[in-house]
Image (cartoon, rainbow, N blue to C red; front, side, top):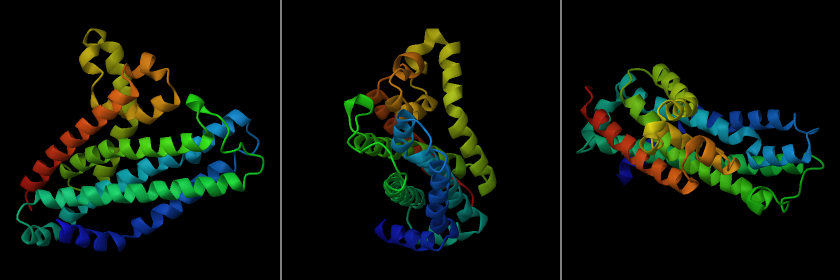
Length: 257
């Protein structure tokens, strides 16, 4: 597995998107930061704790990277060479998954660094020690949001990997992945409202787990939207992530090459 991951890192480093993603991410954050100079103190705290929209952009970039990383092996036929080097093809799938998770941590580091730089250059911004949500400092809120976003990404990336293992080209996998991940919350809300008698079961649907970070910023979501605590959402994310990766690995290993 270690040698396989090293090979994946080498290939990943030579992908253009891997180098462009931090640049794209930084530019998008700068664009939003420029529009917040006249915002109220409360709004500024929100933008800073949410990293000037950086966490949302990371999700989109990770969907693109994850989907293309799986499908391109079949599109370009490189899966044949990789399959010869391993005893079990599912290890290729898991190796890619681990690599993408590692890259997600790197991008979140870029987001936090950019947030520090943008806040410093933003003039009269709230102090990092300013109290925000849960009577915690603004800096703690930023770090907590980053951790929750990375943790939630474990399930989202697993889901995208599963979808990509069923797809025949990267464009379709990316489109489906973005569509599912950004309409999932609405689907979950609709299910919970439509089948209230099944709420004890339906609230554990995978789309409901997408609310993990949002519920931290909006505690009222627990009662009005998700009907789960943050801790329960955390457990649900992990369980569904293991399920998606497991099923995806099976499909990937049995797919015709």
